[in-house]
Each structure stands twice: as C-alpha cells, then as structure tokens.
Image (cartoon, rainbow, N blue to C red; front, side, top):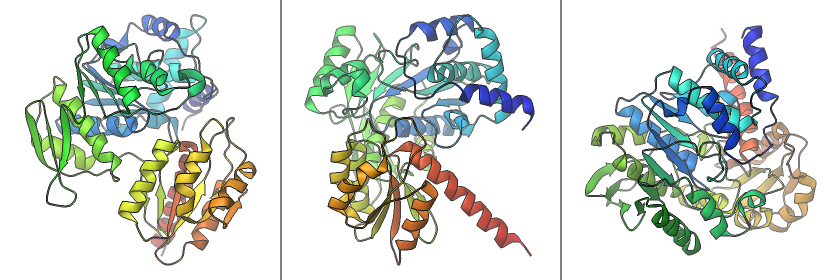
Length: 432
C-alpha cells in the first residue's frame, strides 16, 4: 500500500463512526457538488431492522447472476471499510477507495462537513458512477426518513421485519420506528415488506397508502412455500413462480429474507430469469451471519445484536445444531437490550466468555457477568476477544461448537483473528 493510499484511508477513518447526525441537508448538498451521481443508475433500496443486509446481498447476487454489473453498498463493515462498497461481488480495493476519498475531500473542502456514514454514502454513489454499474443495491444505515441513503428515487423499496432499535433516534415504540423506516417508500414506486407485527404493519400500510406507493406484503401477495424435499422451496407471487429454490444462507429466517429479495426482483425492471435467480441464491455470501468456520472446534459467527436477531440465532441453533454443546463468545453495546437477549441465548450455552470491545458504546463485560452466571454458571470475563476465543475453543470438546454473537463489532474482530489463524496454519502446512 502506497503512502498516499494509507493517508487517504486514515483520513476517512478519522471521521468518528459512532457520531449520528440524522438529516438529508448535508448529503443533498454533497451530492449536488458531485453532480448527483446517485442518479446515474437504477437502484433497489432496502431498509428494516434485522435481515436487510442479507436481503441486499441476495438481491445483488441474483442481479449479478443475470449478467448485470451491480454495485452494493452496506453497513457496517466487519473488518475493513472496503467491505461497504462492492462491485460485482468484489469489495473495492484500497487504491480505488483512496482515489475516491481524495476526490471527495477536494470537492467538499470548506463547503460541507459530513459524518462518516454520510461521506461513505456519497462515496458509494461516486464509485458506482465511475465504475459504470448498471444497478445499485443500497442498504439503509439507520432508520429511513432521515438516513443519508434516502436521497434516491429507487425502482423498488423494501422493508424487512421491524423491531425496537436505536430508540434514542427513532422512538421508543414500534409504531414510531415503523413510521421512520416506511419513509423509504416513494410515491408510485413499488414497495414490498416482510410480514410485520400488527402495530408496525398498520403504520407501514397507512404510510404507503397516504403517499400512493403500491405495497405488497409477504404472506398476502408473495410467499416462500416448503416442498416435500428438505431444503428446497417454491416462491410464488405476482403471477410468477420459482420452484426448486435452494439457499446458500442458513437459518429459518433466511427463508423470509430470500422471499423478500425475490419479491424485489419480481417488481424490478430487470428480467426474471429462473436459472439466474437460482444460481444467485446459491452463490449469495454474507459474512458474519450464521457463517460457519471449519476447524477444531468449528466456529459460528453471527452478528445478532438485538432480541429479534438473537431469537433468529437460537432458532437456527435448534434447527441445525439441536444436540450440540454451545460455547459462547459474547459482547454487546450498552444501547442494546441485554436482558431479553440473555434470556434467549444464555440458557442454551455450556460456557460463556464475555469479551471486551474497543468501542465507545461498549458495555463493560464485568457488569454483564452476574446476568450470564444466572443462566450459565460457567461464565467468565476475558481480557480480549482473542482470549475469549481461545478459552471457548479449549472448552469446546468433541462435537461442540463455538458461537460468537452479540455485536457485529465483536464478530468483525473475531473473524479477522480466525482468518489470520487459518492463513498461518495453511502457510505452515505448505512449508517443506
């Protein structure tokens, strides 16, 4: 990496990632300065609480399998900021990212000050225009109404399942959160939504009706149905049918995510080609979400970081590893609902290893220990993520599984350590 590339990346990372400033004025001014790159290609805009990243990855994979040049913008990243920007399934390389950072900093100098997420959003549009992508898939960052991605006029908008999150910004009640997130719908633009809790579904439907956005809902207008063959599904909706559906992403919740992704594709202006869709579903890769890392013991990485996500994780464990001993590595941010997360996951564990996070909103793990010990006596506070992984692995004998969950920041750190460890083992194996 050249000095110039390193300096550019360091300049981006100096923008505080934890600062949230909702509002569209700054991003609109920035895009005006850049000549509105967000208008350079059609886009599919996906929001919600849990699963929106998986839906984005699935939609992008299917479009790519259909021969389109696809840009994908997601957040947060697990290990490197490059992961947020993908073109045709590959993250943007350091040099290209550095070029974008320098160009945008020069364009914005003394004219507009952006948060880290706003700068990344503007950079995604700039990169996609420069790389001549044919369609962009965009994940909402936080909320919807005032999120920086909500400057686009998409060809389809979609909402995954909604639950309480980021209450300090979005509201303390589910109907308030649904109202904020439904604002990614646009008049006259097709909108699709996963099945929702009653309070959320009413708000979403009413907002769509009020602005004139045609809305289709999972279970009413489209669905994924099981077939007599295990792991094989049939999607139906809008007079279309896709049989022999098999999914690369694991867990029962991914069936609903795939159903929503296929609904987005069915309502998009792009061709509905069965072979491409099946291939795209089988080629979808979304790191850190029920990601199984081979080893002795194997490790399951899952970014579940709220009660709904933890519930999906525990259901997946019951379905896929019903009799396996679970040794958990866990961390959580202080603005998350720890008690319901613990009640769902901790009783399933043989041991719990609480790891500190290098994050401004990290919950001190010592304060989590009494709750962990209430559900699992073999609970310990560790001095680092590396120590937590090592001690969990030592206790995971036989067919046991190490599970890393509670925070995407934790999963990112653990994944980086595991990948380095695997690379070192592979290198040593190759030595004469």
